Amino acid sequence: MVLVLRNEWKGEPESHVTGGPGYGWFLPHDMPSTLISTTIQTVLELLTLVLRATACNQSQIVEIPQELKDSLRKFRFARRNAGSAALVVKINKQTLKMEEVEQFDNISMEDLAEELPDASPRYVVLSYELKHDDGRTSFPLVLINWTPQGSETGLMTLHASALIAFQNTVEVSKVVEIRDGSEGLTKAVIDAKLHSR
Image (cartoon, rainbow, N blue to C red; front, side):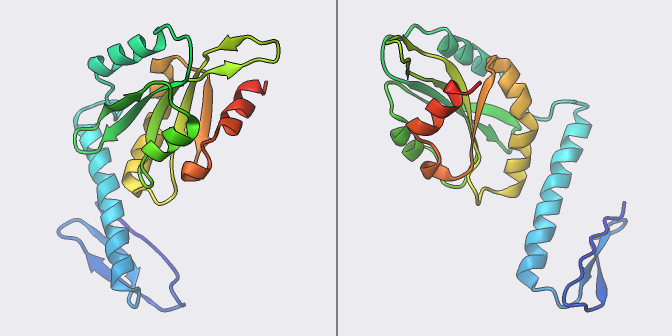
């Protein structure tokens, strides 16, 4: 297998870097060593994930364990009278399995944002306390796709590939994309999403 990466770097000629028998890539000879190292590391991580999935003969790379499915179901059907609740899930990159991180009860969106990592993706299942104009209160289920800038590339790729499977497991139709970290997760953002058609 030969991996070829071509990049015009300052118009300089490319140099060949071998990665062992059967492997190799082309990179500009004066590309900074830190950039070369980062590029190679990212590519190798992605190749490892693909090869691992192929070896397991799985069409779905990331597994959603039954224990997590049970917890999600319990959260989904819990009866609530006041306040928003959240269940946070992450992907374990080593095991390629989703894991429950933590649950929060009666939490504001601003406080929830502070609990989420600054540089790592998360799925957040949110039971949101929604006030209606006619005085009613409901608790619709929302999936927050937390993907802050600066998250590690390989993990973001895994996270994106498993989003639809997770959404189908939770059985939620509303998805709110949050890419701006804590500044992007506010009551106003969730209200706007739920009131939109």
